[in-house]
Image (tube, rainbow, N blue to C red):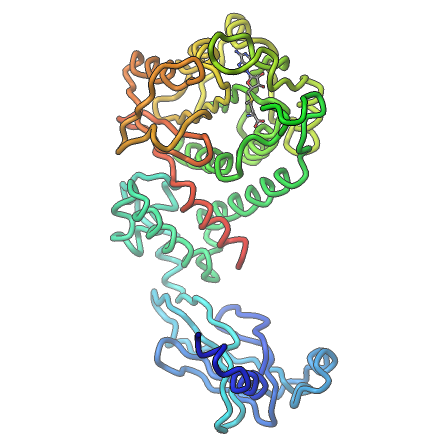
Length: 440
Ligand SMILES: C[S@@+](CC[C@H](N)C(=O)[O-])C[C@H]1O[C@@H](n2cnc3c(N)ncnc32)[C@H](O)[C@@H]1O
């Protein structure tokens, strides 16, 4: 049993005796807010172990008095003060705590806020971060910014632990006023926040069931992928574009357009063209795969309607037909990324000419992958009628680009050329980073 549950009356009393309040603004070293709960409420600003400002509440706050009519001192609970220049000068970066206490009494104090704060030099240094030469699964300029402050935390971006360390440091920058306004940092945060919100919207509102399939059949559910899987692809599109990799994005296999709805929105934000290849009649026949011809069918009209309502139709060019037919008549443009969710080995064989169009620094994502296929950078996949991975691996090898990769989530895996490819971030690290941005 913890102390909280052991002493409920004591804890109730502490809550009652503590002043309450909030910070309304922090800008350019000026802090404003309110605190009340006694006759003489004092405000303190602490940087580490040092109290750098003591101030009083005195400013008229009718809004607080209206909202808390029985709170002592609410009427004049406002405060505003400036942090002393010398406290946050140079490239200082640290935590500021704002406390409120009732006079010099024995009553418990309240923490109104803890926030990151930086000196003007810190923002300047970050803006002018030199090229670090470090490569990893994050946008290069974002890596350079973090490396300019914490090079040791950018040293192991090939490992999950290293990526998590990097993401923690990046979050500090993303939560620090002024530093988080620097273009490379703000652009990246905006993309993550907007796209995670969009993916959640699609996951919530996209039609859940296939009215043309029998209840219980494999294609009864219209949302076959998780946000973790699709958000990792979305993030990689940003990383590839930010790394200067050129080309369009291709999706093979769209069913009712669930993945297309999420991915097309990312393409619209990034100014990328998305090509969607599908029969729009479901799977072709295939022996011994366990799948039936016509499964996972979504008509072109149905998919376009879904993408118009849940994604960005203008960003998409549709290529209707079985892959072998479509690619006989159409050579895809150079591609920076290709995502295939095609269920069948034979379908992967039919799209191999698109693999040739993938940039040597580009990324391939495939469904039908399990975690056991990825063992210390080696890919272990045996040919089988329901395994689309071996044909694309063999094609990449024939192109002189043997692949490495990582498991993403669900049934999705990521692949990139061993030499010179752009690695993909761990899905859990990415989701933690993006979710932390939305939560705070
Ligand atoms: C599992 S579904 C794709 C699911 C989709 N990514 C989603 O998020 O809903 C497989 C899709 O691949 C398409 N497909 C598979 N093999 C094909 C082929 N050889 N030619 C054209 N389309 C094919 C099917 O029509 C179907 O739409």
